[in-house]
Length: 354
Length: 251
Image (cartoon, rainbow over all chains, first blue to last red; front, side, top):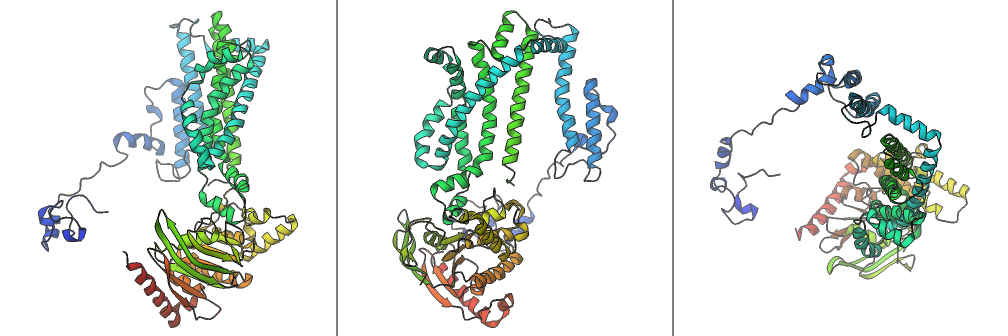
Protein backbone atom coordinates (compact mmCIF):
# COMPACT_ATOMS: atom_id res chain seq x y z
CA UNK A 1 0.00 0.00 0.00
CA UNK A 2 2.51 2.54 1.10
CA UNK A 3 4.88 3.50 -1.63
CA UNK A 4 8.65 3.39 -1.36
CA UNK A 5 10.86 5.86 0.50
CA UNK A 6 9.32 9.22 1.32
CA UNK A 7 6.54 8.53 3.76
CA UNK A 8 4.46 11.34 5.15
CA UNK A 9 3.26 9.51 8.25
CA UNK A 10 4.71 10.98 11.41
CA UNK A 11 7.34 8.63 12.78
CA UNK A 12 5.81 7.91 16.24
CA UNK A 13 2.66 6.45 14.68
CA UNK A 14 4.65 3.76 12.93
CA UNK A 15 6.06 2.51 16.16
CA UNK A 16 9.60 2.56 14.78
CA UNK A 17 12.52 4.27 16.51
CA UNK A 18 12.55 7.85 15.40
CA UNK A 19 14.72 8.91 12.54
CA UNK A 20 15.68 5.42 11.41
CA UNK A 21 14.29 4.78 7.98
CA UNK A 22 12.59 7.93 6.79
CA UNK A 23 14.26 10.98 5.26
CA UNK A 24 14.76 13.66 7.87
CA UNK A 25 12.30 16.19 6.48
CA UNK A 26 9.39 13.81 6.31
CA UNK A 27 8.86 13.38 10.02
CA UNK A 28 7.52 15.97 12.37
CA UNK A 29 7.57 19.16 10.31
CA UNK A 30 3.93 20.05 9.59
CA UNK A 31 3.38 21.23 6.09
CA UNK A 32 6.83 20.08 5.09
CA UNK A 33 5.64 16.83 3.63
CA UNK A 34 3.38 18.18 0.89
CA UNK A 35 6.10 20.62 -0.06
CA UNK A 36 8.56 17.83 -0.47
CA UNK A 37 6.05 15.81 -2.40
CA UNK A 38 5.68 18.61 -4.90
CA UNK A 39 9.41 18.40 -5.52
CA UNK A 40 9.33 14.70 -6.44
CA UNK A 41 10.21 13.96 -10.04
CA UNK A 42 7.29 12.73 -12.12
CA UNK A 43 6.91 8.93 -12.27
CA UNK A 44 8.55 7.56 -15.39
CA UNK A 45 6.20 6.35 -18.10
CA UNK A 46 6.26 2.81 -19.40
CA UNK A 47 6.87 2.28 -23.05
CA UNK A 48 3.45 1.94 -24.68
CA UNK A 49 2.40 -1.66 -25.23
CA UNK A 50 1.94 -3.07 -28.68
CA UNK A 51 4.41 -0.63 -30.15
CA UNK A 52 6.40 -1.09 -33.33
CA UNK A 53 7.36 -4.77 -33.47
CA UNK A 54 4.52 -6.32 -31.54
CA UNK A 55 1.80 -4.08 -32.91
CA UNK A 56 2.78 -4.87 -36.46
CA UNK A 57 1.79 -8.49 -36.24
CA UNK A 58 -1.35 -7.71 -34.32
CA UNK A 59 -2.61 -5.11 -36.74
CA UNK A 60 -1.80 -7.61 -39.44
CA UNK A 61 -4.56 -9.78 -38.14
CA UNK A 62 -6.74 -6.79 -37.43
CA UNK A 63 -7.13 -5.40 -40.88
CA UNK A 64 -3.81 -4.15 -42.23
CA UNK A 65 -2.72 -4.99 -45.73
CA UNK A 66 0.02 -7.55 -45.11
CA UNK A 67 -1.18 -10.23 -47.46
CA UNK A 68 1.65 -9.82 -49.92
CA UNK A 69 4.38 -9.05 -47.46
CA UNK A 70 5.16 -12.55 -46.20
CA UNK A 71 8.74 -12.24 -47.38
CA UNK A 72 11.12 -15.00 -46.33
CA UNK A 73 8.41 -17.60 -45.92
CA UNK A 74 8.46 -20.90 -47.76
CA UNK A 75 5.86 -21.12 -50.55
CA UNK A 76 3.61 -23.62 -48.76
CA UNK A 77 3.74 -21.71 -45.56
CA UNK A 78 2.94 -18.42 -47.23
CA UNK A 79 -0.41 -19.67 -48.46
CA UNK A 80 -1.32 -21.03 -45.08
CA UNK A 81 -0.21 -17.86 -43.32
CA UNK A 82 -2.35 -15.77 -45.60
CA UNK A 83 -5.31 -18.00 -44.98
CA UNK A 84 -4.90 -17.82 -41.21
CA UNK A 85 -4.55 -14.07 -41.33
CA UNK A 86 -7.71 -13.82 -43.41
CA UNK A 87 -9.64 -16.04 -41.03
CA UNK A 88 -8.48 -14.08 -38.04
CA UNK A 89 -9.42 -10.79 -39.62
CA UNK A 90 -12.88 -11.95 -40.53
CA UNK A 91 -13.44 -13.16 -37.00
CA UNK A 92 -12.20 -10.08 -35.22
CA UNK A 93 -13.94 -7.57 -37.48
CA UNK A 94 -16.76 -7.05 -35.03
CA UNK A 95 -14.66 -7.05 -31.87
CA UNK A 96 -11.89 -4.72 -30.81
CA UNK A 97 -9.38 -4.58 -33.62
CA UNK A 98 -6.43 -6.89 -33.51
CA UNK A 99 -7.35 -8.77 -30.35
CA UNK A 100 -9.27 -11.92 -29.60
CA UNK A 101 -11.45 -11.31 -26.61
CA UNK A 102 -12.89 -14.00 -24.43
CA UNK A 103 -12.84 -17.13 -26.49
CA UNK A 104 -9.28 -17.37 -27.66
CA UNK A 105 -8.58 -18.57 -31.17
CA UNK A 106 -11.55 -19.15 -33.44
CA UNK A 107 -12.03 -22.80 -34.41
CA UNK A 108 -11.14 -22.48 -38.08
CA UNK A 109 -7.91 -20.65 -37.32
CA UNK A 110 -6.97 -23.31 -34.79
CA UNK A 111 -7.43 -26.06 -37.36
CA UNK A 112 -5.52 -24.07 -39.93
CA UNK A 113 -2.61 -23.69 -37.49
CA UNK A 114 -2.70 -27.41 -36.72
CA UNK A 115 -2.56 -28.16 -40.42
CA UNK A 116 0.43 -25.81 -40.73
CA UNK A 117 2.20 -27.64 -37.92
CA UNK A 118 1.83 -30.96 -39.76
CA UNK A 119 2.33 -29.80 -43.32
CA UNK A 120 5.40 -27.63 -42.77
CA UNK A 121 7.72 -30.32 -41.31
CA UNK A 122 6.51 -32.78 -43.95
CA UNK A 123 7.26 -30.22 -46.62
CA UNK A 124 10.74 -29.55 -45.24
CA UNK A 125 11.37 -33.31 -45.11
CA UNK A 126 10.21 -33.76 -48.72
CA UNK A 127 12.29 -30.83 -49.95
CA UNK A 128 15.47 -31.88 -48.12
CA UNK A 129 15.25 -35.52 -49.24
CA UNK A 130 14.49 -34.56 -52.85
CA UNK A 131 17.45 -32.17 -53.06
CA UNK A 132 19.78 -35.12 -52.85
CA UNK A 133 22.06 -33.54 -50.26
CA UNK A 134 21.45 -36.42 -47.84
CA UNK A 135 21.99 -40.07 -48.72
CA UNK A 136 18.53 -41.73 -48.96
CA UNK A 137 19.89 -44.57 -46.80
CA UNK A 138 19.99 -42.11 -43.92
CA UNK A 139 16.98 -39.99 -44.84
CA UNK A 140 14.43 -41.78 -47.02
CA UNK A 141 11.90 -39.68 -48.86
CA UNK A 142 8.30 -39.48 -47.60
CA UNK A 143 7.24 -41.51 -50.65
CA UNK A 144 9.72 -44.29 -49.80
CA UNK A 145 8.46 -44.37 -46.21
CA UNK A 146 4.87 -44.55 -47.41
CA UNK A 147 5.86 -47.39 -49.69
CA UNK A 148 7.55 -49.28 -46.85
CA UNK A 149 4.51 -48.68 -44.68
CA UNK A 150 2.17 -50.08 -47.32
CA UNK A 151 4.41 -53.09 -47.84
CA UNK A 152 4.63 -53.90 -44.14
CA UNK A 153 0.92 -53.33 -43.65
CA UNK A 154 0.10 -55.63 -46.56
CA UNK A 155 2.21 -58.43 -45.13
CA UNK A 156 0.32 -58.19 -41.84
CA UNK A 157 3.51 -57.47 -39.91
CA UNK A 158 2.42 -54.04 -38.77
CA UNK A 159 -0.88 -55.27 -37.46
CA UNK A 160 0.60 -58.13 -35.45
CA UNK A 161 3.43 -55.95 -34.11
CA UNK A 162 0.98 -53.21 -33.14
CA UNK A 163 -1.21 -55.77 -31.42
CA UNK A 164 1.78 -57.15 -29.50
CA UNK A 165 2.91 -53.70 -28.33
CA UNK A 166 -0.59 -52.57 -27.45
CA UNK A 167 -1.17 -55.78 -25.53
CA UNK A 168 1.94 -55.14 -23.43
CA UNK A 169 0.91 -51.53 -22.80
CA UNK A 170 -2.57 -52.65 -21.80
CA UNK A 171 -1.18 -55.19 -19.34
CA UNK A 172 1.67 -53.07 -17.95
CA UNK A 173 -0.13 -49.74 -17.82
CA UNK A 174 -3.30 -51.38 -16.54
CA UNK A 175 -1.37 -53.07 -13.75
CA UNK A 176 0.42 -49.82 -12.89
CA UNK A 177 -2.90 -47.94 -12.70
CA UNK A 178 -4.46 -50.68 -10.61
CA UNK A 179 -1.59 -50.36 -8.13
CA UNK A 180 -1.09 -46.60 -8.18
CA UNK A 181 -4.68 -45.41 -7.88
CA UNK A 182 -5.37 -47.06 -4.50
CA UNK A 183 -1.90 -46.04 -3.27
CA UNK A 184 -2.43 -42.48 -4.45
CA UNK A 185 -5.89 -42.34 -2.86
CA UNK A 186 -4.37 -43.50 0.40
CA UNK A 187 -1.55 -40.96 0.22
CA UNK A 188 -3.98 -38.19 -0.67
CA UNK A 189 -6.36 -38.88 2.20
CA UNK A 190 -4.25 -40.31 5.01
CA UNK A 191 -1.36 -38.56 6.71
CA UNK A 192 -0.03 -41.95 7.82
CA UNK A 193 0.08 -43.32 4.28
CA UNK A 194 1.64 -40.10 3.05
CA UNK A 195 4.45 -40.16 5.61
CA UNK A 196 4.99 -43.87 4.99
CA UNK A 197 5.09 -43.86 1.20
CA UNK A 198 6.18 -40.46 0.02
CA UNK A 199 9.93 -40.71 0.71
CA UNK A 200 10.25 -44.15 -0.89
CA UNK A 201 8.16 -43.39 -3.95
CA UNK A 202 9.72 -39.96 -4.33
CA UNK A 203 13.12 -41.65 -4.63
CA UNK A 204 12.09 -44.65 -6.73
CA UNK A 205 10.52 -42.28 -9.22
CA UNK A 206 13.95 -40.95 -10.11
CA UNK A 207 15.39 -44.36 -10.99
CA UNK A 208 15.11 -44.69 -14.77
CA UNK A 209 12.98 -47.68 -15.68
CA UNK A 210 15.25 -48.61 -18.57
CA UNK A 211 18.09 -49.10 -16.08
CA UNK A 212 16.08 -51.95 -14.59
CA UNK A 213 16.06 -53.88 -17.86
CA UNK A 214 19.22 -55.97 -17.20
CA UNK A 215 18.06 -56.77 -13.68
CA UNK A 216 14.57 -57.67 -14.84
CA UNK A 217 15.95 -59.96 -17.52
CA UNK A 218 18.01 -61.75 -14.84
CA UNK A 219 14.99 -61.98 -12.55
CA UNK A 220 12.20 -62.65 -14.98
CA UNK A 221 13.89 -63.87 -18.15
CA UNK A 222 13.38 -62.63 -21.68
CA UNK A 223 9.65 -63.27 -21.89
CA UNK A 224 6.62 -61.08 -21.42
CA UNK A 225 6.85 -60.62 -17.62
CA UNK A 226 10.08 -58.60 -17.81
CA UNK A 227 8.62 -56.25 -20.43
CA UNK A 228 5.44 -55.71 -18.45
CA UNK A 229 7.52 -55.14 -15.32
CA UNK A 230 9.46 -52.35 -17.04
CA UNK A 231 6.20 -50.65 -17.94
CA UNK A 232 4.95 -50.96 -14.38
CA UNK A 233 8.18 -49.57 -12.92
CA UNK A 234 8.17 -46.69 -15.40
CA UNK A 235 4.58 -45.67 -14.67
CA UNK A 236 3.56 -46.71 -11.18
CA UNK A 237 5.57 -44.23 -9.09
CA UNK A 238 4.74 -41.18 -11.13
CA UNK A 239 1.10 -42.12 -11.34
CA UNK A 240 0.91 -42.71 -7.59
CA UNK A 241 2.27 -39.27 -6.76
CA UNK A 242 0.14 -37.53 -9.37
CA UNK A 243 -2.97 -39.37 -8.19
CA UNK A 244 -2.16 -38.35 -4.62
CA UNK A 245 -1.95 -34.73 -5.77
CA UNK A 246 -5.32 -34.97 -7.50
CA UNK A 247 -6.85 -36.43 -4.34
CA UNK A 248 -5.27 -33.81 -2.13
CA UNK A 249 -6.92 -31.14 -4.28
CA UNK A 250 -10.36 -32.18 -2.98
CA UNK A 251 -11.51 -29.26 -0.78
CA UNK A 252 -11.70 -30.20 2.89
CA UNK A 253 -15.04 -28.42 3.14
CA UNK A 254 -16.64 -30.91 0.75
CA UNK A 255 -15.50 -33.80 2.91
CA UNK A 256 -16.76 -32.04 6.03
CA UNK A 257 -20.07 -31.22 4.36
CA UNK A 258 -20.51 -34.88 3.42
CA UNK A 259 -19.73 -35.93 6.99
CA UNK A 260 -22.35 -33.54 8.42
CA UNK A 261 -24.85 -35.08 6.00
CA UNK A 262 -24.21 -38.48 7.54
CA UNK A 263 -21.54 -39.96 5.27
CA UNK A 264 -19.07 -42.39 6.84
CA UNK A 265 -15.37 -42.27 6.01
CA UNK A 266 -15.76 -44.84 3.25
CA UNK A 267 -18.77 -43.05 1.82
CA UNK A 268 -16.88 -39.74 1.77
CA UNK A 269 -14.14 -41.50 -0.17
CA UNK A 270 -16.48 -43.13 -2.66
CA UNK A 271 -19.04 -40.37 -3.11
CA UNK A 272 -16.96 -37.21 -2.75
CA UNK A 273 -13.21 -37.79 -3.05
CA UNK A 274 -13.38 -40.23 -5.95
CA UNK A 275 -15.68 -38.25 -8.26
CA UNK A 276 -13.96 -34.97 -7.44
CA UNK A 277 -10.46 -36.34 -8.09
CA UNK A 278 -11.34 -38.43 -11.16
CA UNK A 279 -10.63 -35.75 -13.80
CA UNK A 280 -7.25 -35.04 -12.20
CA UNK A 281 -6.48 -38.75 -12.09
CA UNK A 282 -7.30 -39.03 -15.78
CA UNK A 283 -4.94 -36.14 -16.46
CA UNK A 284 -2.22 -38.05 -14.67
CA UNK A 285 -3.02 -41.18 -16.67
CA UNK A 286 -2.84 -39.23 -19.90
CA UNK A 287 0.67 -38.06 -19.11
CA UNK A 288 1.76 -41.49 -17.97
CA UNK A 289 0.19 -43.34 -20.88
CA UNK A 290 2.68 -41.51 -23.07
CA UNK A 291 5.49 -42.76 -20.82
CA UNK A 292 4.12 -46.31 -21.01
CA UNK A 293 4.05 -46.16 -24.76
CA UNK A 294 7.69 -45.04 -24.70
CA UNK A 295 8.77 -47.79 -22.35
CA UNK A 296 7.18 -50.58 -24.34
CA UNK A 297 9.20 -49.63 -27.39
CA UNK A 298 12.37 -49.38 -25.30
CA UNK A 299 11.71 -52.81 -23.83
CA UNK A 300 11.16 -54.29 -27.27
CA UNK A 301 14.33 -52.74 -28.62
CA UNK A 302 16.37 -54.81 -26.21
CA UNK A 303 14.81 -58.23 -26.20
CA UNK A 304 11.71 -59.28 -28.07
CA UNK A 305 10.42 -61.36 -30.95
CA UNK A 306 7.47 -59.15 -31.72
CA UNK A 307 6.28 -55.60 -31.32
CA UNK A 308 6.97 -52.26 -32.96
CA UNK A 309 10.29 -51.80 -31.16
CA UNK A 310 11.40 -55.22 -32.37
CA UNK A 311 10.41 -54.25 -35.90
CA UNK A 312 12.69 -51.21 -35.67
CA UNK A 313 15.65 -53.35 -34.57
CA UNK A 314 15.02 -55.79 -37.43
CA UNK A 315 14.92 -52.97 -39.97
CA UNK A 316 18.11 -51.54 -38.52
CA UNK A 317 19.96 -54.80 -39.16
CA UNK A 318 19.21 -54.53 -42.86
CA UNK A 319 19.68 -50.75 -42.99
CA UNK A 320 16.03 -50.31 -43.96
CA UNK A 321 15.65 -46.74 -42.70
CA UNK A 322 12.42 -46.32 -44.64
CA UNK A 323 10.90 -49.09 -42.51
CA UNK A 324 12.23 -47.51 -39.30
CA UNK A 325 10.59 -44.25 -40.31
CA UNK A 326 7.34 -46.01 -41.11
CA UNK A 327 7.26 -47.66 -37.69
CA UNK A 328 8.14 -44.38 -35.97
CA UNK A 329 5.26 -42.63 -37.72
CA UNK A 330 2.93 -45.41 -36.65
CA UNK A 331 4.14 -45.22 -33.03
CA UNK A 332 3.48 -41.51 -33.06
CA UNK A 333 0.00 -41.90 -34.53
CA UNK A 334 -1.00 -44.57 -32.00
CA UNK A 335 0.32 -42.37 -29.18
CA UNK A 336 -1.74 -39.49 -30.51
CA UNK A 337 -4.84 -41.70 -30.66
CA UNK A 338 -4.35 -42.78 -27.04
CA UNK A 339 -3.92 -39.18 -25.99
CA UNK A 340 -7.02 -37.99 -27.81
CA UNK A 341 -9.06 -40.87 -26.39
CA UNK A 342 -8.04 -40.10 -22.82
CA UNK A 343 -8.59 -36.41 -23.39
CA UNK A 344 -12.13 -37.05 -24.60
CA UNK A 345 -12.79 -39.27 -21.59
CA UNK A 346 -11.46 -36.57 -19.29
CA UNK A 347 -13.59 -33.89 -20.92
CA UNK A 348 -16.64 -36.07 -20.44
CA UNK A 349 -15.89 -36.92 -16.82
CA UNK A 350 -14.88 -33.36 -15.95
CA UNK A 351 -17.91 -31.62 -17.44
CA UNK A 352 -18.90 -30.33 -14.02
CA UNK A 353 -15.69 -28.38 -13.51
CA UNK A 354 -16.07 -24.66 -13.98
CA UNK B 1 -33.91 -28.12 25.41
CA UNK B 2 -32.72 -29.45 22.08
CA UNK B 3 -29.12 -28.33 22.12
CA UNK B 4 -27.23 -27.74 25.35
CA UNK B 5 -23.64 -26.55 25.73
CA UNK B 6 -22.04 -26.64 29.16
CA UNK B 7 -18.74 -24.98 29.90
CA UNK B 8 -17.31 -25.78 26.46
CA UNK B 9 -13.58 -25.13 26.16
CA UNK B 10 -11.40 -25.38 23.06
CA UNK B 11 -7.66 -24.98 22.94
CA UNK B 12 -5.27 -25.13 20.00
CA UNK B 13 -1.74 -25.98 21.12
CA UNK B 14 -2.40 -24.63 24.58
CA UNK B 15 -3.95 -21.39 23.31
CA UNK B 16 -7.51 -21.01 24.50
CA UNK B 17 -9.96 -20.08 21.73
CA UNK B 18 -13.21 -20.81 23.52
CA UNK B 19 -13.59 -20.42 27.23
CA UNK B 20 -16.53 -21.78 29.19
CA UNK B 21 -19.24 -21.42 26.59
CA UNK B 22 -22.68 -22.30 27.89
CA UNK B 23 -25.91 -21.98 25.96
CA UNK B 24 -29.24 -23.64 25.40
CA UNK B 25 -31.32 -23.76 22.26
CA UNK B 26 -34.93 -24.89 22.43
CA UNK B 27 -36.87 -26.61 19.68
CA UNK B 28 -37.92 -24.20 16.94
CA UNK B 29 -35.68 -21.45 18.25
CA UNK B 30 -33.63 -19.14 16.05
CA UNK B 31 -30.44 -18.17 17.82
CA UNK B 32 -27.81 -15.87 16.32
CA UNK B 33 -24.26 -15.69 17.56
CA UNK B 34 -22.33 -12.53 16.75
CA UNK B 35 -18.78 -11.61 17.57
CA UNK B 36 -15.74 -9.93 16.14
CA UNK B 37 -13.05 -11.99 14.47
CA UNK B 38 -11.12 -13.98 17.02
CA UNK B 39 -14.21 -14.75 19.07
CA UNK B 40 -14.06 -18.37 17.91
CA UNK B 41 -17.59 -18.39 16.57
CA UNK B 42 -16.81 -20.65 13.63
CA UNK B 43 -14.83 -22.96 15.93
CA UNK B 44 -17.87 -23.16 18.19
CA UNK B 45 -20.02 -24.23 15.25
CA UNK B 46 -17.46 -26.85 14.22
CA UNK B 47 -17.55 -28.29 17.74
CA UNK B 48 -21.34 -28.49 17.69
CA UNK B 49 -21.23 -30.06 14.22
CA UNK B 50 -18.79 -32.63 15.60
CA UNK B 51 -16.08 -31.82 13.07
CA UNK B 52 -13.58 -31.09 15.85
CA UNK B 53 -13.41 -32.46 19.37
CA UNK B 54 -13.72 -30.02 22.24
CA UNK B 55 -10.99 -29.70 24.86
CA UNK B 56 -13.44 -29.61 27.74
CA UNK B 57 -17.11 -29.28 28.63
CA UNK B 58 -20.14 -31.03 27.18
CA UNK B 59 -22.29 -30.63 24.09
CA UNK B 60 -25.59 -32.50 24.10
CA UNK B 61 -28.29 -32.80 21.50
CA UNK B 62 -31.61 -34.15 22.73
CA UNK B 63 -29.77 -35.54 25.73
CA UNK B 64 -27.09 -37.39 23.75
CA UNK B 65 -23.48 -36.21 23.81
CA UNK B 66 -22.05 -35.08 20.47
CA UNK B 67 -19.17 -37.31 19.43
CA UNK B 68 -18.86 -36.75 15.67
CA UNK B 69 -20.55 -35.22 12.66
CA UNK B 70 -24.06 -36.32 11.78
CA UNK B 71 -27.10 -35.34 9.75
CA UNK B 72 -29.06 -34.36 12.88
CA UNK B 73 -26.76 -31.31 13.02
CA UNK B 74 -26.67 -30.07 9.43
CA UNK B 75 -24.01 -27.45 8.76
CA UNK B 76 -24.14 -24.85 6.00
CA UNK B 77 -20.80 -23.29 5.06
CA UNK B 78 -20.21 -19.76 3.85
CA UNK B 79 -19.08 -21.16 0.51
CA UNK B 80 -22.05 -23.53 0.30
CA UNK B 81 -19.65 -26.44 -0.24
CA UNK B 82 -21.91 -27.95 -2.89
CA UNK B 83 -20.66 -31.08 -4.59
CA UNK B 84 -19.71 -29.64 -7.98
CA UNK B 85 -20.06 -32.96 -9.79
CA UNK B 86 -23.68 -33.48 -8.70
CA UNK B 87 -26.76 -31.73 -10.01
CA UNK B 88 -28.82 -29.50 -7.74
CA UNK B 89 -31.31 -32.30 -7.08
CA UNK B 90 -28.53 -34.80 -6.39
CA UNK B 91 -26.92 -32.37 -3.97
CA UNK B 92 -30.18 -31.99 -2.06
CA UNK B 93 -30.65 -35.76 -2.09
CA UNK B 94 -27.08 -36.54 -0.95
CA UNK B 95 -27.93 -37.16 2.69
CA UNK B 96 -31.13 -39.02 1.85
CA UNK B 97 -29.26 -41.35 -0.49
CA UNK B 98 -27.24 -42.57 2.49
CA UNK B 99 -30.42 -43.67 4.25
CA UNK B 100 -32.46 -46.80 3.55
CA UNK B 101 -35.16 -44.83 1.79
CA UNK B 102 -37.16 -45.91 -1.29
CA UNK B 103 -36.24 -43.95 -4.41
CA UNK B 104 -39.75 -42.59 -4.84
CA UNK B 105 -39.84 -41.30 -1.28
CA UNK B 106 -36.44 -39.69 -1.73
CA UNK B 107 -37.54 -37.99 -4.92
CA UNK B 108 -40.67 -36.69 -3.22
CA UNK B 109 -38.63 -35.13 -0.42
CA UNK B 110 -36.03 -33.66 -2.76
CA UNK B 111 -38.80 -32.09 -4.81
CA UNK B 112 -40.46 -30.65 -1.73
CA UNK B 113 -37.28 -29.00 -0.51
CA UNK B 114 -36.37 -27.79 -3.99
CA UNK B 115 -39.73 -26.11 -4.36
CA UNK B 116 -39.44 -24.72 -0.83
CA UNK B 117 -36.21 -22.96 -1.81
CA UNK B 118 -37.63 -22.05 -5.24
CA UNK B 119 -35.16 -24.06 -7.31
CA UNK B 120 -37.34 -26.77 -8.81
CA UNK B 121 -36.74 -25.43 -12.35
CA UNK B 122 -32.97 -25.76 -11.78
CA UNK B 123 -33.13 -29.31 -10.42
CA UNK B 124 -30.83 -30.66 -13.13
CA UNK B 125 -28.41 -27.74 -13.23
CA UNK B 126 -24.83 -28.10 -12.02
CA UNK B 127 -23.57 -25.89 -9.18
CA UNK B 128 -21.28 -23.98 -11.55
CA UNK B 129 -24.36 -22.72 -13.36
CA UNK B 130 -25.88 -21.18 -10.20
CA UNK B 131 -25.51 -17.72 -8.70
CA UNK B 132 -24.11 -17.28 -5.21
CA UNK B 133 -27.56 -16.90 -3.66
CA UNK B 134 -28.91 -19.95 -5.47
CA UNK B 135 -25.97 -22.00 -4.22
CA UNK B 136 -26.73 -21.10 -0.63
CA UNK B 137 -30.37 -22.05 -1.19
CA UNK B 138 -29.24 -25.46 -2.37
CA UNK B 139 -26.89 -25.81 0.60
CA UNK B 140 -29.71 -24.97 3.01
CA UNK B 141 -32.11 -27.35 1.27
CA UNK B 142 -29.47 -30.08 1.34
CA UNK B 143 -29.02 -29.74 5.09
CA UNK B 144 -32.75 -29.43 5.78
CA UNK B 145 -33.60 -32.51 3.70
CA UNK B 146 -32.02 -34.63 6.44
CA UNK B 147 -34.47 -33.04 8.90
CA UNK B 148 -31.82 -31.98 11.38
CA UNK B 149 -32.65 -31.36 15.03
CA UNK B 150 -30.65 -28.18 14.66
CA UNK B 151 -29.54 -26.38 11.51
CA UNK B 152 -26.10 -24.80 11.89
CA UNK B 153 -25.31 -21.85 9.64
CA UNK B 154 -21.74 -20.54 9.44
CA UNK B 155 -21.88 -17.02 7.95
CA UNK B 156 -24.14 -18.38 5.23
CA UNK B 157 -24.60 -15.06 3.44
CA UNK B 158 -21.18 -13.57 4.11
CA UNK B 159 -19.99 -13.93 0.52
CA UNK B 160 -23.10 -12.43 -1.11
CA UNK B 161 -23.74 -8.90 -2.33
CA UNK B 162 -26.04 -6.71 -0.24
CA UNK B 163 -29.21 -7.12 -2.32
CA UNK B 164 -28.86 -10.89 -2.60
CA UNK B 165 -28.08 -11.06 1.09
CA UNK B 166 -31.32 -9.26 2.00
CA UNK B 167 -33.30 -11.55 -0.30
CA UNK B 168 -31.69 -14.54 1.36
CA UNK B 169 -32.49 -13.23 4.84
CA UNK B 170 -36.15 -12.97 3.93
CA UNK B 171 -35.91 -16.40 2.36
CA UNK B 172 -34.30 -17.98 5.40
CA UNK B 173 -36.92 -16.48 7.71
CA UNK B 174 -39.64 -17.93 5.47
CA UNK B 175 -38.00 -21.36 5.40
CA UNK B 176 -37.63 -21.29 9.17
CA UNK B 177 -41.32 -20.51 9.57
CA UNK B 178 -42.37 -23.13 7.02
CA UNK B 179 -40.27 -25.96 8.37
CA UNK B 180 -40.21 -25.15 12.08
CA UNK B 181 -36.50 -25.92 12.08
CA UNK B 182 -34.24 -25.08 14.99
CA UNK B 183 -31.57 -22.71 13.73
CA UNK B 184 -28.23 -21.67 15.17
CA UNK B 185 -26.56 -19.07 12.98
CA UNK B 186 -23.11 -17.57 13.36
CA UNK B 187 -22.56 -14.21 11.69
CA UNK B 188 -20.49 -11.08 12.01
CA UNK B 189 -23.36 -9.03 10.59
CA UNK B 190 -25.21 -7.56 13.58
CA UNK B 191 -28.09 -6.31 11.45
CA UNK B 192 -28.63 -9.81 10.11
CA UNK B 193 -28.51 -11.30 13.59
CA UNK B 194 -31.08 -8.87 14.97
CA UNK B 195 -33.35 -9.20 11.94
CA UNK B 196 -33.47 -12.99 12.02
CA UNK B 197 -32.74 -14.12 15.56
CA UNK B 198 -35.21 -14.57 18.36
CA UNK B 199 -32.21 -14.27 20.60
CA UNK B 200 -28.75 -12.86 19.96
CA UNK B 201 -25.62 -14.00 21.75
CA UNK B 202 -22.58 -11.74 21.74
CA UNK B 203 -19.20 -13.43 22.00
CA UNK B 204 -16.15 -11.65 23.39
CA UNK B 205 -12.77 -12.25 21.74
CA UNK B 206 -9.46 -13.76 22.88
CA UNK B 207 -10.60 -16.14 24.17
CA UNK B 208 -14.15 -16.50 22.88
CA UNK B 209 -16.71 -16.42 25.66
CA UNK B 210 -20.35 -15.41 26.06
CA UNK B 211 -20.41 -11.68 26.77
CA UNK B 212 -24.14 -11.06 26.59
CA UNK B 213 -27.39 -12.69 25.64
CA UNK B 214 -30.24 -10.52 24.40
CA UNK B 215 -33.81 -11.39 23.51
CA UNK B 216 -35.04 -9.74 20.33
CA UNK B 217 -38.46 -8.26 21.19
CA UNK B 218 -39.50 -7.75 17.59
CA UNK B 219 -42.67 -9.12 15.99
CA UNK B 220 -42.57 -12.82 15.10
CA UNK B 221 -42.92 -11.98 11.43
CA UNK B 222 -39.65 -10.37 10.31
CA UNK B 223 -39.58 -8.21 7.21
CA UNK B 224 -36.95 -6.02 5.67
CA UNK B 225 -39.03 -2.91 6.49
CA UNK B 226 -38.37 -3.70 10.14
CA UNK B 227 -34.80 -2.56 9.67
CA UNK B 228 -35.96 1.07 9.59
CA UNK B 229 -38.02 1.02 12.80
CA UNK B 230 -36.61 2.75 15.89
CA UNK B 231 -36.84 -0.45 17.98
CA UNK B 232 -34.72 -2.32 15.47
CA UNK B 233 -32.17 0.46 15.16
CA UNK B 234 -31.85 0.81 18.92
CA UNK B 235 -31.32 -2.92 19.40
CA UNK B 236 -28.87 -3.08 16.56
CA UNK B 237 -26.86 -0.20 18.02
CA UNK B 238 -26.82 -1.90 21.38
CA UNK B 239 -25.55 -5.18 19.98
CA UNK B 240 -22.98 -3.36 17.88
CA UNK B 241 -21.69 -1.55 20.94
CA UNK B 242 -21.43 -4.84 22.78
CA UNK B 243 -19.53 -6.49 19.94
CA UNK B 244 -17.20 -3.54 19.66
CA UNK B 245 -16.71 -3.24 23.39
CA UNK B 246 -15.81 -6.86 23.84
CA UNK B 247 -13.55 -6.97 20.81
CA UNK B 248 -11.55 -3.84 21.58
CA UNK B 249 -10.00 -5.22 24.74
CA UNK B 250 -7.18 -6.93 22.91
CA UNK B 251 -6.79 -5.02 19.66
